[in-house]
Length: 139
Image (cartoon, rainbow, N blue to C red; front, side, top):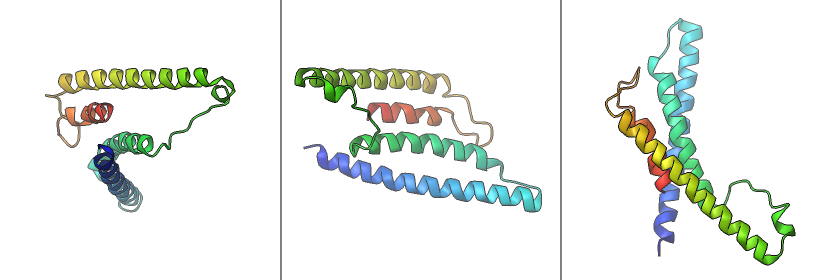
């Protein structure tokens, strides 16, 4: 029932990651060329690249989870009996949900605290930066 919308969301996020990475490459490369060749630079480049990197990391975590692409080690778990493997799977999911809750709560608090604070260069609300943690912890 939810598989198709989640697959579409993962595809959209993959495309957004490609766009973010391309923009980061262009910004950083342009900034390097401007600094070395013309002794100037883009003030926006560093901050926007950092923001794009954070958003891209969270998007990649969602897509990786969807595609079961996260790294894992099952050297111990595969030696357990069937009930032990199921117990480890359940414990892993519970711990993952707990960490997502911690991330959501912390990012939510930071979003509220920094709502009226603007970033140094782009002068946009810092809550946009912390919204990445809220959105992707909820997903």
